Length: 305
Image (cartoon, rainbow, N blue to C red; front, side, top):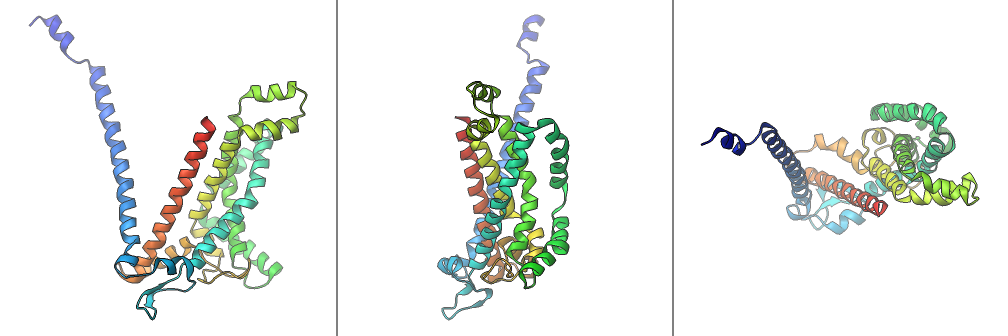
């Protein structure tokens, strides 16, 4: 064969590198998908064992208030009333998000609309510092400062939903703020210029134009903060009291799904009713995380329209 024709038929080095890169990325993507599916399948299989293998009641799981999975009731079913943990998880999460959102949005508006230079110079390092602090440090601060303050103001032991809420508030503030800043910066500049050209004041422009245009991004930031708060374990466990009881007030000891998991997973034998019940709590946390991600994707898609 003619050497020139032979060289033209051979694949170039760049084409070979491109093919190898594409195959490598496809392999890594497939591996990640399989890993996620394997984790989901494993937790789902373990999570339903308490209902399939031990004949636990799904209704009791969501409605009863007594958590003793190593014991059985008169129907010889494990006692798996998870309502106190579910209520505790949602209570600290929702309260923390409700309290943190106004502060986060105010900080984001200051950093992007009112004083971008000063805001970035002062608040940006503070936010980055808060993000980098480990959870256990937040827990220690809550234990040393927040719990005694709650005890002094409201009585009781100081451990409870209020202490957990205040710790989570500080933890999710930087998350919501940083994402809100990105959402506000994404609003096109000509929106502001057109509003000001029509005679609107700066506050009217912020309130009626910028915030409305950035609404999907801001909602995504809030949902992401909620997801972070719902999955937090160590810091909340240190200040909430860890009592598997229905909370009677904000200052009474309570517990969360993550707290029960972290405290008991190492103290149960694999395959027993107590261990299977903990896997059910893990499955519930996984489903909640999945729902939060679906909502975030939906809001992000609405923002692109």
